Image (tube, rainbow, N blue to C red):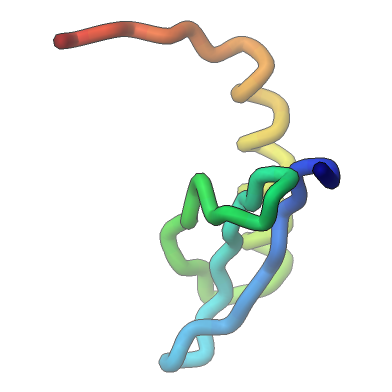
Length: 60
C-alpha cells in the first residue's frame, strides 16, 4: 500500500480543491473550493498541521 497524498484538482467552475487519498487511493477527505491555487495549497498545509493535534470526539 502506498502513502496517503493530497491531490489538487479544478472544479467545473475553475476553482481549486483538494482530495486527501489513503494509501490505497480511496478519497477520505474532500475540501471546500478555493479561488486560487495558492489558497488551496495553504489549506493543505493548515490541514497537515492541525491533523496532528486533532482529538477524536465520539458523539454517538
